[in-house]
Structure formats: C-alpha cells, structure tokens
Length: 386
Image 1: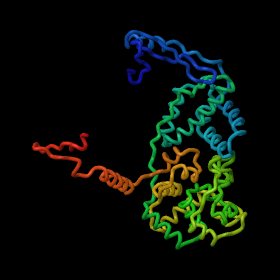
Image 2: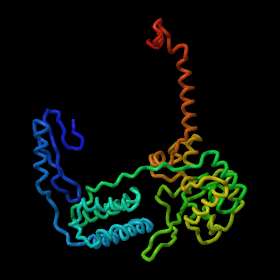
Image 3: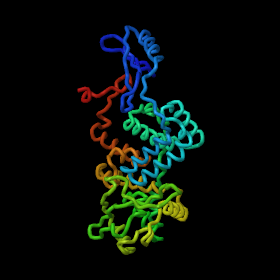
Image 4: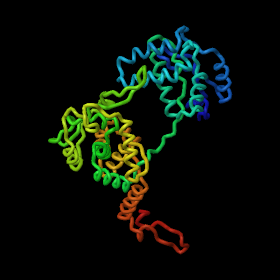
C-alpha cells in the first residue's frame, strides 16, 4: 500500500517501487523514473538519493516574462473572443507583470509563484480570483513551452483551493412575492426580471435581447448576443458580443403569461427590450435596478444571477429532465447544470423523504416486517428470511 504523501508503492511481485521526477518533455510535462527495492525503507533511501541529483532542464531563455506575455497575447488574440482577450490582458497587466514582468523567464521558479499566490491571498483577494490569475499565467506558460520548446515552469504550480459558496436564493414564497410586485409595477426592468426568472437568461443576455429576437408566432426567444463591460487599454467599454459558447446560442420557449406581457411592450425590432432604444443597457445598471427593486418589494438582497439559479431549481422540481434544462440554460454539459445550478431546499428534501417512506411502506407492511420473540428482541419474520 502506498504511504500517504510519498510516491512509493508495493508491487504485485512483492517488491517496492518509488517514482521520482527527473526532467520535462518538450511539451512541458514532467517525466518520471522508478527505483526498486525489497523493502519500503530501501526504496525511500534510493528516492532521497535520486532527488538530490540535478533535474535536467531546457535551453536558457533570456526573454523576460513581459516580452513573452506580449508575444502570447498577440497570438491568443486571433482565436478568442474580445471579452476573453480583455480578461487575459487585464490580469496580465494588473497582477502578473508588476510581480514578474522584468524577470527572465527561465529564472522563474515554482517557489516564487507560490509566494505570489500567498501574497495575493493575504491582500484580500479570493482564492477563486487568484486561481483565475494563475490559470491565465499557466495558459501563457503552456504556449511558451510549445512554441519555444522551453520547460513549462508553471506545470507544477498548484491552484489555491477555493471554497464553493452556496448561492443565496429567494424562497418559493419570496419568489411569488417578487412576481406579484413586478406585475403590479410593470416597466421594461420588471419585464426583464420576469424573463430571467422564467427563462434563466444570463444578465448579459437579457441586456442584449432585442425585439427582433422574439418570435411571437412560435412563442420563443432566440439568444444571439450578450452585453458586457470589458477592460481596454485606456479603461473600460460596453460591447455587444456573441453568446458565451455555441451552446449559448439557443432558442428558448416562453411561457404564455410572459409572452402576453411581451406583447404589451412590443416595439421596433431594432430596439433593445430593456433600454427601449437602439443603445443597450449595461449589466451592472440592471443589477443596480434589481437591488433597488428588491428593496421596494420588501425582499432580501440577492444577486441578479440568483434568478438563473432559481429558474434551474424550479424546473427540476417541476419535473424537467436534466438534458432539456441544460439546453435551455445553454450549458455545454448536463454536469454543469447539476453541479452549479441545482439547489435543494429543506422542504424539497422532506418531500423526497416522504415519497421514499410511501414507496417503502407499499413493499413492507409494519406487521410483516418484525416479529417479537420472548426476549423482546426484533427478529425478521419468516417471509423476509426466505
């Protein structure tokens, strides 16, 4: 059995085997060798001797991290969306270059990157955000490894562990209260909040929705664009972009009650539904309006994205199959739907346990399950023993 924290195993032939890293392949992947012995202690000693030997490396690189990041950004710009590129560029310029920009790439070490990670965490950044920064750095290092045949220095860097935070949702009662308030105070913002709650559209997709995207004959909405605020060289800008992925470009059936409200507000095909004009409203404006709306409705503050979570949870509780729900949400896989957007309430768990109790009681009647002996100990009945 392998010892915890050590790459030492007992083989089927009775010998012990230990593996250690001795270098890297051209694509930056670690390469390993093995040592063998008749005892665990013998293999451990051989491993200690092997680990003190210098690890083979690639040719030196006199280019700095800054120079290689500029090369990578120029290349990656050709195959990613503008919003994705802007995100890469921002993280490189704001976080990576101030720390590593002037450093020669081949002098970069795992220890220094780990120290950088710890400093970012200590400064108050979340583990999730720091992981996003390091993922960008790792992507750049992988490109450098392939294109320039340099060792992928960041291959051995471990991402900080981020705790998954449970999304706070409005209860079913609170959702009903929200719907009543929206129907009593109808305007373009209320309409879009209803659309998010009943179709699961993302905030950027709602902001990018135009009247031409609504098919009143087929009772459906086609998602064609998303509105985002992205970082530019001189600041930020609001842009209209294609949806998040190919799966995000989808057609969603609209409930009859929501379609009726859409008809009340129907306007020119070239107008955005939320703004009521040819210029789109940016997501953070809608998010700010949503917070204000919740306050006026006497409801607790939740994130706008929680409407999408609520939609997914409501659909599953209503009997939707996961595949259909995944396509409505625009997910690439059903795993994303189940892992991120399904929330179970205590009421739902109680209802499920009641269903279980009902199902079991039809198979096992209490009078048939147990018979009591003279010792008053429960004994399985004759029918169950058979």
